Length: 225
Image (cartoon, rainbow, N blue to C red; front, side, top):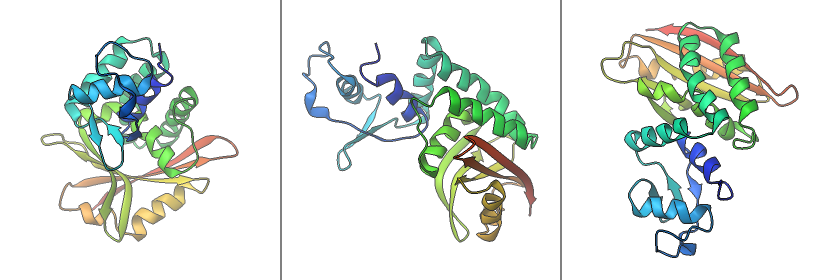
């Protein structure tokens, strides 16, 4: 049973999203689940999910819990999401090899297979698809959204965890614009330079989604201090 979007909600939170929730519908007996928000409220009470009272939003609080939910997805029949998670290992390798065409096609596949969950309408929605597409990268990286760097905020930054000998990834997203424009923004706002004390090599990744063709395009460049 999907409880009117429970599975979709879990997948969205796996990508880092915070979701609106009504915790007042729950009967507080741990057995009477009538809707999605009832189940999410129980998970809040049990400590698996965090709740922002001011915003009335639920979210996954840390990497350990995110990993547990990821395992649950793997053991379920969510075939399209499972495939995206499996493909994310390949996608990271393609990124590190600077295979921009392969990266674009991989993101296309994740988007096409999960359109009912992750609908596109702006760069924020695009960032959720990117987070799902790179899900397994979380084993080696810490993902930071809207990271303040240089003269602005980088859309997504992947910072290697300690003892991981991978380059940092600075990802800039564009919606119905151009991937080269994304790369130029990274350079013009000195995003990479602001990370020069963190790691030797940095990969600049520009990704654009073309609304008309419904395809992604990508440019990947190396930056060294």
